[in-house]
Amino acid sequence: MRQDVEPVAAMYRDMGTAQAEQVVTRALGELALTMAGLAQQVRGHDMTNLSRQLRRLQRMSEHMGMISLGLVAADARDCLEQGDSTAFAAVWARLLRVAERSLVVDKDVLDQSL
Image 1 (tube, rainbow, N blue to C red):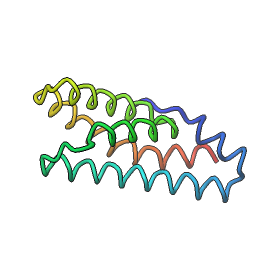
Image 2 (cartoon, rainbow, N blue to C red):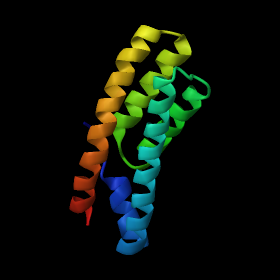
Image 3 (cartoon, one colour):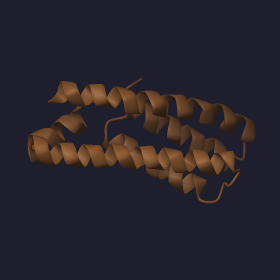
Image 4 (cartoon, rainbow, N blue to C red):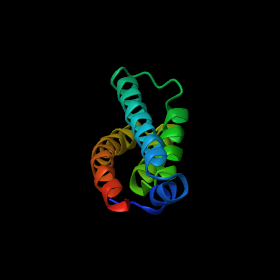
């Protein structure tokens, strides 16, 4: 799991603890909702706008310093765009694992950045 604590630490330095905490909490909530929406789409075999949603997840992850999550989201998007369903299934499973770990690890990172 690769993470860069600097984006979150910079928010705390620039905004102050209370405002940064709100921004980070909101961003983590959006990440979780995005992942839940993606998971629902994949379970339902609804690939409409999936590539766009994976790109959104990638950008949000990168903004929060979640390097691994952003990279795996990009890989899933590449597999989807290439039409490789076998590779997509494998990368999707990895994305789920990385997302779960990233969201848990990020709470620990937040504590360290204060």
